[in-house]
Figure 1: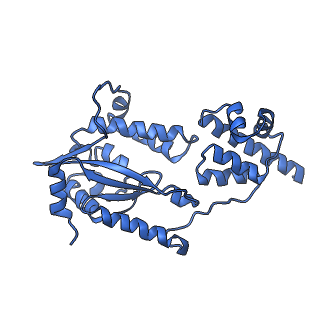
Figure 2: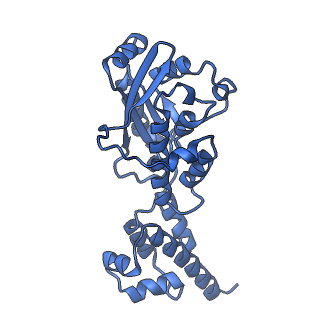
Figure 3: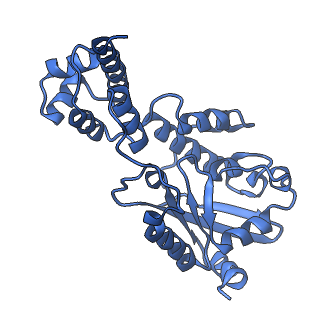
Length: 277
């Protein structure tokens, strides 16, 4: 392959990726061109492969499309440039302040549960109250007893997870599937959110619940997950925090989920069972 042919191939790969992400974001060529200070003709040439972008132009367009950092790296590669954003492990020296901050947030949330989860909703780390809650609920759940790893959404929707203990399971399932659909719509096909959504829709009753309409006129201020096991009832809602202006691929995918009691009885249960020792 000659150099000119290689450049043309790279430009075509970049153009296809640019076009796909523009459509995912629901923007026309004119919209994106105006937002980026380009002519529609220039943008059209970039998408068709007739023009080859500079490294700065790739990053400019990727930023305008609010692409995840990992996908921005992929777009750079498709245009023939080296990736910009690293994906460090939490044990890297540069990550120590972030690692300490996450651990601090988990401790500060006690006696209430807190999790650090990745983009696919898998738990990366958790504080002690999470372990207490899991130990309380897991008896009789086949998936947990067998040690099969599950993510936070699946553990609530799967009959082998916590589903038998969720009193308002239909309400929870409806809103979790809506969240996954929203995440999938903001990504290209074949991504983690889309794959997780497909897997969840295969679980019993989930598709039927997901197709239901929510016609309530008096919705609560936030979704509360209501657990019941025996005579014990627990009600929790969550707040999700993300890293401010992450410049690392792994950090962009990290979410801190803080759980809070929705009633006095739940607060008392966690204070009695999970207070710092």
